[in-house]
Each structure stands twice: as C-alpha cells, then as structure tokens.
Image 1 (cartoon, rainbow, N blue to C red):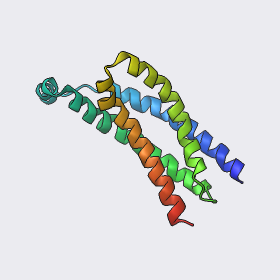
Image 2 (cartoon, helix red, strand yellow; image 1 turned 120 degrees about the horizontal axis):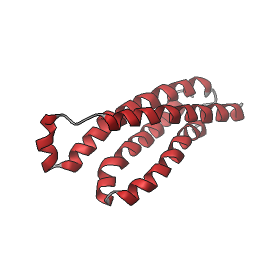
Image 3 (cartoon, one colour; image 1 turned 180 degrees about the vertical axis):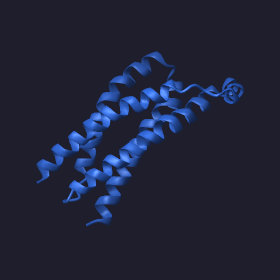
Length: 137
C-alpha cells in the first residue's frame, strides 16, 4: 500500500509542477500599477517581495493545498513521506531555475524576492503533513 501512495504522490507532484509553470508565467506577466511606481522606486525589493508573494505565492499555495487535500484522501496510513515525495518534483524543477536566479540576480534581491515564495510552500507542506498525521491517527 505504501508503494502505491508513493507513486500517487509523485504523480500528483508532477501534475503540480505542470500547473505551477503557468501560474508563475501569468504572475510574471502582470504589470505593476502606476500607483505602485513611486513606492517601487523607493523600496524596489519590498514591492517585488509583496508582488511575488501575492501574485505567485498565494495561487501556488492554493494549488498546493488542493493537491495536498487530494493526496490526503489516498494517504490512509497517514505517513509523512508522501508529502515529501509530492513536493520533490516541484523543488527539483525550480531548483534548476534557482541556480540561474542566483547567478543573474544580486543575492539580496534573490533572498528578498524569490526565496520567500518557495519557503512558504515548504513550510505549508510541512505544516499540512504534520497536521494530517498527528490529528488523523
């Protein structure tokens, strides 16, 4: 049974990766409003951080929640490993992108804008896995 849930969680992770690419693409394509431009000139990292979290991080988190809830239906043994296997394809694909982001961006810009989005997803997955395994035994 555990091998079946591991395969299902990996397949759900691959589906999540396929969904994350358009979410991030649409998020990058959204233009900044004129109201933010004055504030963006004074605090560019803060604006990019907020836009990254709101425009890309929250939709990714919502999609992650849906897939994690589906995974929870299949996870009868309430193990934590399927949640890690679920997030692994996403982290592998985006770690490839992160290598190029670190090279092309200033490290402080990377830490302020890109890293919180991925940290949010990792923290949520860990919380969801702990919540499901502790409360549903």
